[in-house]
Length: 249
Image (cartoon, rainbow, N blue to C red; front, side, top):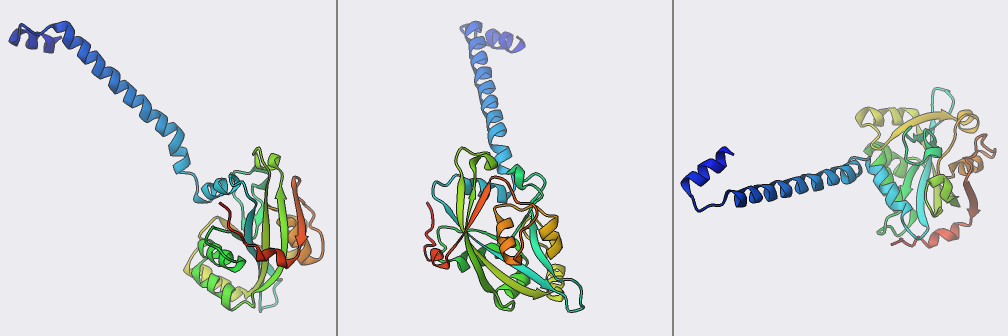
């Protein structure tokens, strides 16, 4: 009102009602812009700040074509005579797929469109997850060998999706010493998620698994694990299936 009096006093031709209407329109535009910014915060900020692994997971599950994955069973031999252990990934308590929360998983992961064979996928994924020295030891000093191939199928219900998701999996085995693992972890921490060092008995009797790796570990140990995940089925397939490492769109 003070502004209106000043303007009208200086310029008697100016209509105060026109000024009031202009000010109301300006406020309306301001409120609209603020509301739009609020919508952006509500819808996009949670997505931006979710863990990178969750973004990649969601992108993978949205694909229409079945996936490819390469993983490794990492056996840790202790030269002091202590029980052999296995290095596995531990899914978080808030992992997006509820049945897989706090479960164990093998290190490795999904193929990308540039991967031409399973070892390319495994090399890249380990580089993203594990310390550099440990990756180099697994790839070059662990007698890395192919273990088997499987077709892992997840029902839509377990994923919380409308469509199921399946992937062809190439599994390898690596053996390294406990000293080598300790030295690598002293230099650099695990890059992605958390890990666990578990004995054969723990893996067979106590743990639950994500992505059908309960079947893989049962095959590896020659004995079924105690806790199979409902909603996941796995078929053992011939190694020749891996020749078709076709990237998906």
